[in-house]
Length: 367
Image (cartoon, rainbow, N blue to C red):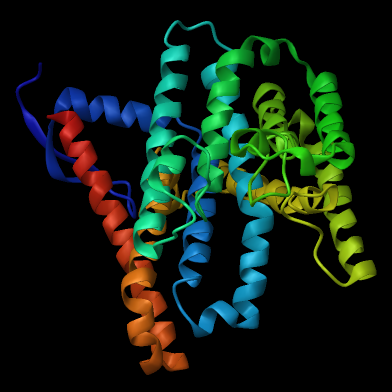
């Protein structure tokens, strides 16, 4: 142990080392950890987390929830965010969990599953407490029999960790051709499978269902496999990836032009899933370009570098608490301007609380 001390914290806005105290070994470890991360993927995850948090917070306000801009913003976030997270997860999983024989992989996957389950419980139970839903009891949430609103995506990621534990060796043997076949097959299955027969929340989050809102892994599998493919083969796949993305989002736009409505989201249709392909592709391209030219957005990189879950859970709990405790009391006094100010204050509160919890967690780890 090196006995000298230096000021240390990885500051989200500057990346400088400041404020807290750590040993030199701890500083070197943290700096090396940051250097080994994929900064483009971290920035992309941070951006997606910001979008999802702001989208969830729009449901706290009254006027802005029904504003046409808010509706379109939420539609865009709904179309791209879960897909983007799954793409990033696939990209990271290939090198961290799939294409490796390290003994601690199973332990890391279990740790990720437990952490995600805890986040699901915190978010889901907070929803019940502050919204007082009589049709959903806490025990049914703990047993994964009921899925509270705005917590569905957490259950999906929990199941992904479990599926990875069981199938990562099979995924390792898949080349690009078989990943393409699996992606196409998943879209065919969600189109022809009678999802209305599925009533279990767990199976619904794997295959799909009409009984409740969920994010079925089967439907969004192509984004996970796209992330795995780009992580495995690098930018050699950029051209076909970009071409397929244009085609997919083109199908989505054509559907809207013909029908005048959005494709079905719960359960997701092929057109809905395809709609997020080009935005996710462009996110990856833009943040990769930023990383190559040294234009790192430290705030997004900080959030995406292992702190995404904290921000999303804090955002959900804050939204539930403030809507349940204050919305009915202050709504009568709200104007358009005051509602906008209230929304801006909520965003500041959520990011402030999330940052504080991240710092507390880091201080506990180094001591």
